Length: 631
Image (cartoon, rainbow, N blue to C red; front, side, top):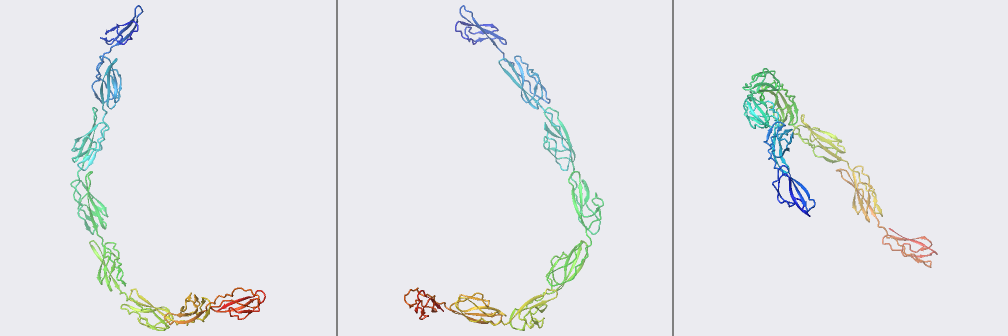
């Protein structure tokens, strides 16, 4: 108990209703024992003091019993969305269902055998809790496993195979687990629970398998599939290849022990009389290779095929070796006709040569012998008779290379002899190419030439033989005229460092100036009127030469004399005198001679050529005299 302690007076506890033993009734916080259960036990605390009215207060203490131990019932597995719970009925306290995990709707939460609806697929956990007042509740759980209906089984499409194994194609269960079983026939299931398991050791014929999908306690779903195993057909043999000269033939294929055979045309032309017979006849065969195929088939197994070729040869094209040829070279090209049917081949019948491409109608032939060479063109086709034709190739020898002899230069000559080579093969002939001249004997290698013109005359020496290209060589004969007689012009005396020469113009030949003596520089050596520069003092000699080819040169010289410039004149200082006479003070010339002259005023010069001559008769005022040095 927990009453207040009196400040004045004394207190006492008393039991008003219910049951219980007060430990010490005068203590405000005394202990209690033997409390009554399940109903209120009421105690009163009264404080008294003498004659005063007592003060009282009550407290109610209710004692609860521990609730019944909870038992939620056994776990359940169902295939529906509803179930019924099996919790225990509380002897003490009240029960209540709650959803712990999963999903589900509790119809009556306080009923131990309540119904559950809307159960989720999988494990759904519920708790049954029994409570009583302030006592600790008692709880237990139960799981309701809801299994979903399994996926609808689909064993996959039926199959036809040729091998002893196959791969299944059932659906993979979204819900549940699938299992393969053998229904009929034979086969070993590699992975019975795999939708796409392989099957081995299949028997020939129909083999039936079942795919069953189950899930928990729900009904299974099953479907079947058949695997048809076909046997491998007999290996096809089309028979040996044939070469015929007719439009018909007979096949030689093998008989099928397993499966059925069929002839087909692969390429070429031909009619198959009985396609399903291994020994069928053939008609209307095309010329050339005709290929037929013998195929043995059985169900879905890979067919076995073999081919045979029937070669039909046609009569070869009639051979034509082409026209005869006359050539000069060691090689040529043959002109046989192209074989429309068959194959051609060249052979050498006589003479000598190398056939480059014997099977080409237009083969080149090399190393032909000089003279007649005969070839045969043969066209063959398989077993048919060959056709032939011949052609002759006449080879002319190449003429001796022409050599007209060395070029010649003459001076004013009217006749001479040529120096051509004598042909070992072929014949030679001289011709006038340009210029003027008369050939005495045109077919003679060393013929004479007369009436030769002045200048360059060109002759050709040509050696020819048959159809071969002629060999030609030319020779140049230069007949020079005598050059113009040279005339260097008149001699010159000058004071300058340059002058212009005056040679004559060369009517025949070419002129050129040369320095004979002196240091002069000829500005244009080939000009008769060339300027010359840098002339030395005194005598300078130049030569004018006119030449023309091999003829003698004509020469002439000219002398150009250059005088030395006079000493520079110095008349002396100006003078002022008081008399009518005086003396000059000009410089004495190192080169040349001096001379005084009166320019203005009055005065008589005593000795005009003396630099210090005297003067008389001087006029009053300015008298001007000039001192001139000349050379």
